[in-house]
Amino acid sequence: MARRWTPRQFLIRRRIRVAVCVVAVMAASFTAFGIGARKTVALEINGNTKIVQTYAMSISRLLQEQKIDVKTHDLVDSTSGNDLTNHDVVRVQSAYQTTINIDGQQVPFWTTATSMQQLLAFFHENQQNAVKVTVDIPNVYNQLTGGLVINKKGPVTVIADGKSSVAPNGELPAASILDSKGIVLGKNDRVSVETDNGTTILRVRRVKYTQSTKTVTVPHGTQTIVDNSLAAGETKVEQQGKDGEKRETFDNTVVDGVVESSKLVKNETLSVAIDTIIAVGPQKTETQDSNGSGSGSGSGSSSDGSSSSSSASSSDKLSSSSSSSSASESSKQSSSKPSASSSSSSTGTSTTSAAPKPTPTSKPTTSTPTPKPTTTTPTPTPSTGSGSSSGRLWHPTVAQAQTYAAGAAAQRGWTGAQWDAIVWIWNHESGWSWSAANSSGAYGIPQALPGKKMGTGWQDDGAVQIDWGLSYFAQRYGTPLKAKAYWLANGNY
Image 1 (cartoon, helix red, strand yellow):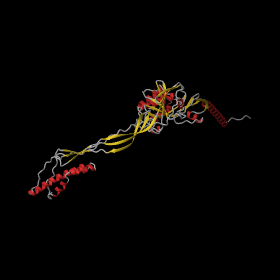
Image 2 (image 1 turned 60 degrees about the vertical axis):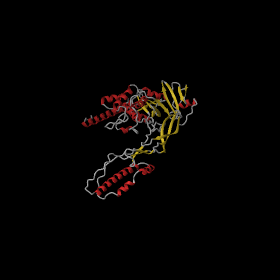
Image 3 (image 1 turned 90 degrees about the vertical axis):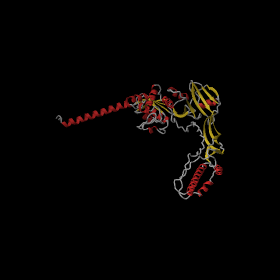
Image 4 (image 1 turned 30 degrees about the vertical axis):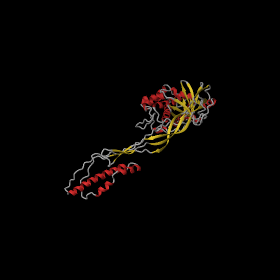
């Protein structure tokens, strides 16, 4: 007997068909994803290249898979940006810190250059301003800095102790070149590399620290006092002035026999300046009549009181004027002052209310304070080494900031139009001012929002701001040209 069809059987068969289709689609999807997600990538680490197979979707994930430790200043880039695609080339370059000198300001600079010549070339590629750039080598025997070759392409001119010579093999490290020339470095000596009209120069500067003193004259001043024993308008020199002296001690930094900087460390007074004291006679005063209707004796008593009051007033002014001078000066002045007349006049004063005290027509000349000599504060100059008080690129000028950025950008391969895009964006954002602030909270050359995310020193250090800005270009847009295109479309980046 044939099996009878029922709606239940139809429903079961339909569910089976749907399940089979779902499984088939999922299997096909996983297969396609596996084939598509599997990538062959060329991974280049400090010039050494290897081919790897990966399913990673980003560069950071690939580096984690390969257990590659990337430091903060290391450069990582890819032919397709941050997203990883098949047949990409991913480059990782380890950075080390050296010191560059931009127009006399020493700046720690992280670089991936393999030679000093290459490092200088980074700055020359995007150079637009006449800024002098040299590379300092704090320790020529250091494996990372002094161990770098100077110039792979040819000879090097060595300048030391006023003499110039040529080292034919530019592929040697700085320490080897100096040793071959018999140049022995002192612990404070400076070594730097620079280029001049295509010539690579390895320069040694001899540094010594000395102390010097000098004697400085302190000018004396002039004081004027009122002497009642002198006639009106008469003058008399009571004390002849004399200049003082002080000894200043300086710590000096001497480079190649020339004082580069001086710092005042001690100030001793050898002799105190003595002011010239000039006595002048009192001004004439007019006596006013009393307003009361007393007897003749009362009037006479009142006038005596007036004269005694005037004498006391003059004595008070003399005392206050002379109190500002030294003790020796006071003793000389007391012999010439009629201080006794004040007390004797006071005893003869009437007890009744007398006429008002006469007011002098002019006030006696006040004392002239002794002028203090002005001292010139030596201009501090950056010290060598990583302990410089100037930090990195501390409060840079526009030219210094652009020079630093040009070298840092060239390390990433951003020259020509890419560099022009950086200049254009930061001209519009901040005018290349390290202190540019926006009401929104954006700050610095790249106008980071908020500014503190740029890291330690973000408020003052142009190098910190530029390093962060270039990293931002790379991570968000890939290149400065793409960032500029976004800026033109949106008015920001």
